[in-house]
Length: 150
Image 1 (tube, one colour):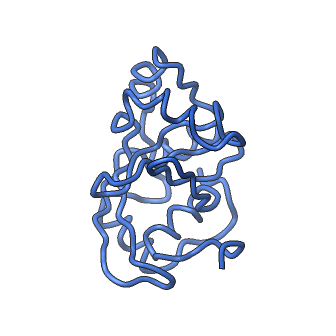
Image 2 (cartoon, one colour):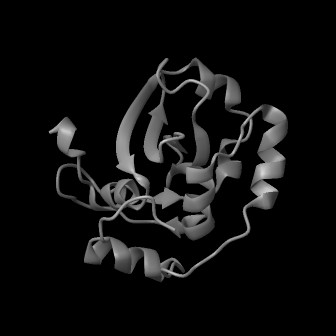
């Protein structure tokens, strides 16, 4: 279930459908939750809802986007295994609130969701706010800057 009211742009929806997504898709997230819990990651409700709908998808988009190059994703929280200390060392406003949801397709950045349902891209010592749930996912796939970033 999406945590926002925005419909997905047609191109992003098509890319997601090609990767195996459908609006009624449901994935069991319990194995991810169990595997990441020993590190101290606590799956909150927004991450659970997002991963239930989009978890396990690999969407290898590329090319020019609206504001920057389109960013493909691999929505598998296990790709962030071993990164809890790093997650907690980042930007104080998100410390301890981020749950991994995957990574940028080529592995250059991790993707995480905060307890408010906002997706963030983490790289080096930076945290970039992307947007809420499916809207944030669509922004990555479309290469669209968040309105407040423009």
